Image 1 (spheres, rainbow, N blue to C red):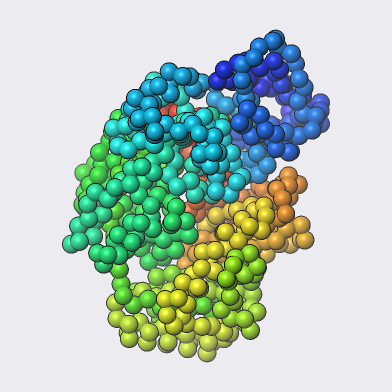
Image 2 (image 1 turned 90 degrees about the vertical axis):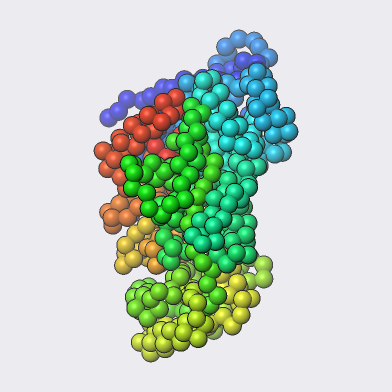
Length: 564
């Protein structure tokens, strides 16, 4: 049996020192042992939110003792974070290597980006400190809005020399807490770097700055007869730099593949301020190591993406969308196989949702209508075809649908007759995440699982949780990507312990990945070992230490703290 652990939580401050020091008291919480699944430094205790000096952290009743350490009037905050779900399984300590922001630092930032681009307004900081789900909240005291790569380089060079931690931020739409501070990291928001630099209508190569919003890029390309190779529910807010940094997947992955294939070049600023120009526009370049791949999916831990060169496909004129109902998950698989055979090159999306997902959207989103009100089946498919010949594409779709109905795999369905109906179908699929957010607390898991096993996890989770939560499953069936969501009235430690580590263990046993497209962020570094071997993780650590030896870029994310 491991001995009880007693950790001193040191205070950090921007001004006055505190009058109290809080010490972990293992006797107050039972054994005080580290949880079996904890990979981060700290202890496994959660409870109610507690606000102090613009910080949010959690504690269990009677966990801390107060100890007088002298009279002073300086402002302070805790050097630890504790969250009620996911990483959230353990207390995270603020890295003592990082410096505390001082007035001279603010003055330097103002000289670099201008006073208006140094934000310390409470309301603006509040929005930047909290993630989209409202689950993770940091305590940054300043947000910077650089307008050029040189400004980003100056910021990082200075922060690296001072040991000031930095979190890069785009549209702040991360679902794993990757784009918000954990403690007092300086937020560097790329939103002001939003210029389209060039577009070649012959090759379809777009070059733009990292702060360009995905939807704006898609609209720009549409005017030139092209489209973005990715489409996300958050397209109206997310930025291309963040998309690249998280290797975002989305609704067009089945047709166009991942950003690892579509990104031709990057401009990246390293933690020490070095600007690395890899902004090539060639589809073929076999000279040495393809270093840009390190930053695609690196989640801003190795460098800050400032410019992107992207291969974009032509926007095809013939688009068809069908919404189909199936009796069981096996039928969904059979329809997928049939779609690949019958639709072939025009198949552009193959999405699935269970009845609970559809009900969630219908119950919590305004203006939603059930496309198949009389069907009441357990599963639904949204299938899209995209091509250049309307008659040819419709003929292929008709043949496919006839076969799907004849074999009994599809029991009901409807094909959109115009763009309005197509948008309504897609609104259901894209709106599930929003509906879940409105329903209450939600535990989200973005998993890659072999298609034949994918829905089994949903069924086992339902059996495990019973009436304590609503378990829904939906996602990109064509990619083997399940979005498992557990909806509950509030976040609850007992519920979490039923979910984790079971969900990760199950995924690992079935040769899946604990992150299909959302990344690891702050939510899942402790779970990386379920998908990656120790040797692979150690290689990642070596790469992180090589490029960011001071660990200032997006700390506490992606890699388990014990390895850094």
